[in-house]
Length: 253
Ligand SMILES: Nc1ncnc2c1ncn2[C@@H]1O[C@H](COP(=O)(O)OP(=O)(O)O)[C@@H](O)[C@H]1O
Ligand SMILES: [Mg+2]
Image (cartoon, rainbow, N blue to C red; front, side, top):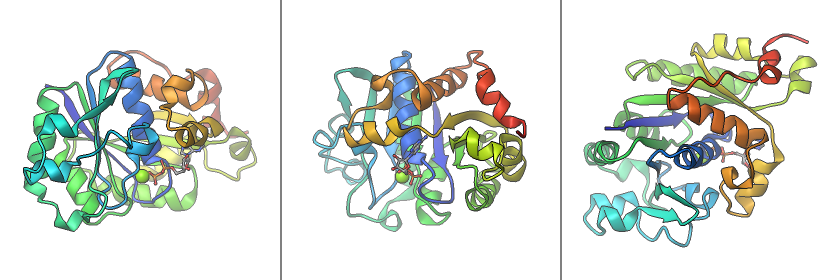
C-alpha cells in the first residue's frame, strides 16, 4: 500500500506541475513504483512536462466514465519504466468530475503503487477540493515571495485534516535572499506554518527540459534536478540532509 499526496499551492505558477513531474520521475528513477495524476482538469500540462503528450490518449475522466480501462489510460516512458502518468481531461472542468469516484480511483492507484502524486489546480475551489479530497498526504509548493507565501498559508490551513503537510520552497535565488528581495527559508516556513521538505533553486534547466519534453531527472542530477531527487529520497524515508549551501540560505546575508 503506497501513499497518495496532493501537490498544492493556492497561487498559480509557483511550480506545482514542475515539482510533480520532477519528483515523480526521481521517485521512479530511485526504484519506487510511482503514478502521477494530473488533477488540473481543463488546463492539463503534466503530460507535456513528462514528454507523454502523444501517449496520453485517455484521461482519468475516461476511466471514471467507463470509456477507457485504467491500464490503457496509464502511460509511461521506456526510459523511466516505474513512472506512469494519468492525464487530466483537456476540456472537462473539475466541477463536472465525480469527486467520490475520483477519490476511489486514487485509492485504487495507491494500493498498487508506492507513491501517487496528484498535481493540483491553482486556487482553493473545486479543483483543489477534488485533488485534496482524494489524497491522504499533502505537499504545499511556494516561491519565496509574499503573495505566494500568503496563499500557501491559506492552502496549508485547508490541508489540516491531511497527514501533516510539508513545504517545498521553489525557485529560490540566494542572491535575492541576500539582498532581502526574497524571503529566506525560515521566514517562508513561519509564514506558511509547515515543516520544510525541501528547497529547489531557480534553474533554467526546468523550463528548458520542459520545452524539450524531457523529465528533469534525465537531464542530470544537478541544480533543481538534484534538489528534487533529494526530496524524493526524504519521501522514501532516507536520511538526506539539505546540502550546506542550501541550508545557509536560511541565514540572512
Ligand atoms: N525551480 C525552477 N526554476 C526555474 N523555473 C521554474 C522552476 N520551477 C518552475 N519553473 C517554471 O515556472 C513556470 C510555472 O511552473 P509550473 O510548474 O507550470 O507552475 P504551476 O503548476 O504551479 O502553475 C514554468 O515555466 C516552469 O518552467
Ligand atoms: Mg500546474
